[in-house]
Amino acid sequence: MKIAEIKELATKELQERLDAEVAVYDQMRINHAVSPLDSPAQLKHQRRMIAQKRTVLRQRELNNK
Image (cartoon, rainbow, N blue to C red; front, side):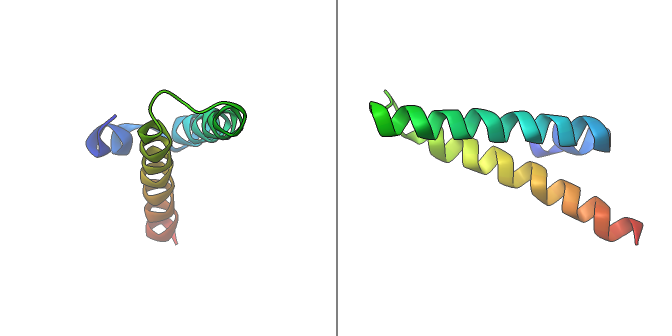
């Protein structure tokens, strides 16, 4: 998902997607600890997606004040 697509989402939907991304990331970390993932770069990609969504939410929070 590109940053432009993230910015088009409603705040509530964006928060829901962020929560889902965090849950997936946590599960991936647990799985990686037990048996290595095929591509550890997936963890990096997941972290970046979470960061992008948190950044957009924070920008909206600051703009609304």
